[in-house]
Length: 507
Image 1 (cartoon, rainbow, N blue to C red):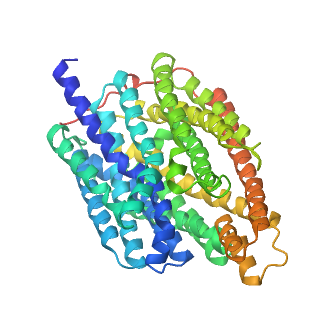
Image 2 (tube, rainbow, N blue to C red):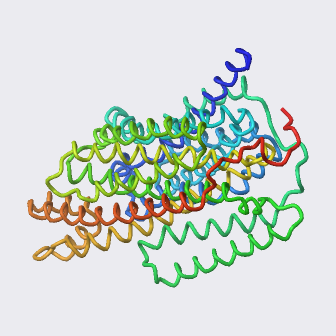
Image 3 (tube, one colour):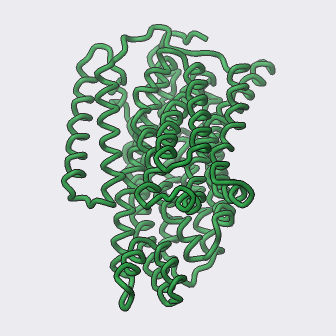
């Protein structure tokens, strides 16, 4: 490849990495600011939960139709639009003076993220040759992963020096750099022979996914047998079943579900979802452990996530190199096995364990997740024709996000049940007991107000019991994923070059 072309691809890769960095930041930066926002905006628990969940709901619910839209109307154009939406929503959230406005802005941020993520990954499939695609994908994935520890680190620093809205403004200069680079160096790409828009498919998939994710988000609070939750799951199942039936029957589907007839595409998606389940489960329990058991503030919690991210970065690089040499199956299976081992070690944590022990299993788990995640996604991209890259990778990202939301809901219910059962609140006033049972953060707050250090010890022990079970569940699922990958995933990677010939992509 000529040097000038390599340089242009490097600049394009930088632009794509900056684009997804803001999504990684927004995964964790909100957690730092919630206590401050609760005070400044007089926001209750429900409002705070929806400040977080509004983003997840729209992010997971819109990616399928967005992928098809990007293929049809141009990936560069849609990426710029998504970044503009994200920037404007960030400004709106920073200037909001009520919880309702912040929730609305966070929902729009979710729309922007749903546009950015599949479009950026689809652009990699179009811009890079198969030999370079895995490396490019690993860089973008590492860029998003880097945002996870940077969120609380940057957020903690900003809150110490500015007001809570500054955590949203940090997105704006990053997006400005990304848009500038995209406009200057990224070629436009689209399907040269676009199909007729599948409006019914888009409507069924969007409403079905939104209903599914909403039910998953609300289930831990309302209860899994609540009539609204049961109705939500039933309606989502009906809508998504109708969507699948329509896509298999219509002559011009939004998503080509026949891709799932290929084992590489199917198991690439399954493994990406399994890895995400483990990662989301880990990120769900670890920050609270670092803050309320080991006693670190938000800034130092972010710093102590670096072993996890360090292992993740090493794993991404190693998994990509191994996949390029011998195929995707081995690094995925080994990565899932390492993930299970790391989580199993973490499940032996007790109240006497310190950060050195935590850093060990964080690093092992991060290494496993990184080793499996990029090859899983690259296995999907490898069999997608470039003109269908947006809709194809949108399937993977939707499964990851929807599966992650449902997984966190299930794991959250499990953690909450064990924590509540193990916590001793005898002798506490009813209101204080309810607050302590609600969360470990509530228990620590109650203990500080009434001067009861024994309650802190009990809450920490109860939380660790719940965390252990969550990590065991995630470890078992990762181990099952490793075994099934060995049994069913193709041993030799089928590349795009071996796929049926496709028309060239206009650029």
